[in-house]
Amino acid sequence: MEKGYWKDYQKAIATDNYFYERSCIRQTFFPGSENAFIKIIREELGLKIIDDKNLHTCSGIGYYSGIVPLETTMTVIARLFSLMSETSSRNFVSSCVTSFGLINEVLDMWEHFPEKLESTRYYLKEATGRSFELPHNVAHSSDIIYLHRKALKKKMIYSLVNKKTGEPLRVVEHIGCHYAKIFPQHGVGGAEFPQVLAGIIKEWGGQVIDYPERRHCCGFGFRQYLIMANRGYSIANSKKKFESMKPYKPDFIISNCPGCSMFMDRWQYTIAEMEGVTYDDEQKGIPVLTYEELTGILLGYNPWELGLQLHQIQCEPLLDKIGIPYIIDKKYIGKSGKKLNHPLKPKNIIA
Amino acid sequence: MIDYYSLLRRDIRFVEGLNACMNCGVCTAICPAAEFYNYDPRSICNILMTKDNEKIEHLLKTDSIWYCGQCLSCKTRCPRGNVPALLISALRHLSQVTGLFTNSEKGRQQYAIFKTIGENIINTGYCIHLALINLKLHPEQGPVMVWYKENAEDVTDLLGANYNKLGEGALRKISQDNLDELKKIFNITGGTDLYNSINKYSKTKAKELNINCEDTIENSAYFFHVFLSKE
Image 1 (cartoon, rainbow over the protein chains, first blue to last red):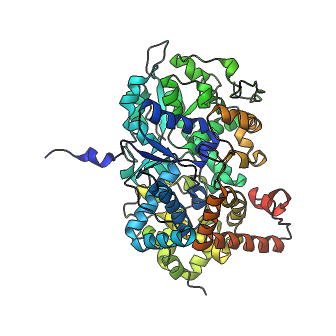
Image 2: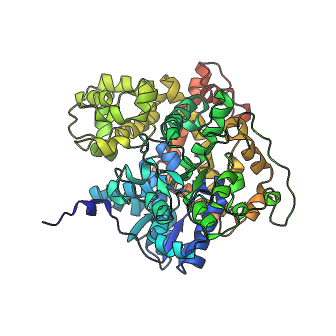
Image 3: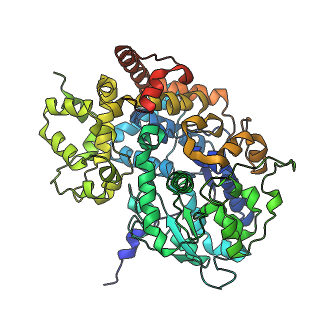
């Protein structure tokens, strides 16, 4: 009998004609990443992606913090589906891991409790006059990059190889809890064998670090981070991951989830300020990239137009390792070329 | 006494989340919250399976239901298909609609989440937006974020965003007709009722504690009381 175990770790990803759902966190902290994603889909891959001006939050952060009822969140998501239904696309692509997980959860609940789907249709109609169709395919935006990783590789100027040593860069990848822990069958590689970022890293020449706390939560915890009194939860969980990955000397971290990307960047800074500890050998910290930023720099996009200057842990050491040129004097400018002031430097981390 | 168990059974998250727990404790072993707090999702399942309304009422009044980080790691691991995180969501909802959340320090923090994330959603259509981040509440964001906020228009323009303007793009202003529809959705589905419940019970608690609870965050001593857990 043919072994079919790995079928459990595959997922169907739509090949074209995407409806893009923007992420509150990614827009806020990494607006260049969302811009780059659309550019990559349209200009590098020649595919169709719809960016709707009427988009709004899925309410996920409020829902997982307990302040938004399930019925409200279902109807807010139904409105997003209604916007999609007005277009030619039925391939819903979420920029946010939490939104991706929540949408899969809502679809799963509608399947188990069809009366909830009917009541959601009623609520949406009553509130807005709208109706909606269900998506044919739901993907996270990293799934799309994963699907097209080979085509993108052909267009890349750089690879994940240390220019000086010729060795593959050592990469920590973090897929985020809500990508595959809620529904492993909806994540490439499931929760056990995460491939969505690992496959990209390997395809583009890097080496994936399989460290003990690879699957541990970054520590967002919604209400645990949002409330200052609870933030110890958040930083403690990230610290556990940093300590676990440190012996493997990662060149950088790539994260699937916009929240995880931000936390693993900011908590390195905070730990350095609080305890004088960094998790690299040069007291600079480990750069944390989004997958759009990684794709963009390897394609030769200007790092400052991708938004690498918005990271608290500076990314220049990584650019130097890959051999990507950049103009440091253009790091802090506006679009018109206006020179901006520079951020203050942290005390305990070299920036 | 209120039949809390029957109320919980009306929540599909409760129906989905509790099948037949065999007390193996895998959920507690994998739980990031259990590692940080004195929290045990296994015991939450245990209490709920008793269907004992006195025990459930006690649970609704305690910090225990507010420790979970909703990572859903428990869903992946439970050999019986239970989901303690879904049970926690149902318990949190019931605690807020009954007002019992103000009995615990962690429960009272819901007021601060309502005043930040909750009002953000209704007023702007975003849970979080660059313009809405109050860095006084987020010192961990560091000096680059301070710089980014100070130069938001110039920087977001360079990055191809559409900062606070109507139309497509990252960080765009969401138009009033979209916000009106969101508001109507909240009204008809119980979202506004839950906001009102959190607000009403929190103001009652603030009065009981003799702490000022103004509607604006800056002038609300109660907001900072719960945000910083000044107990």
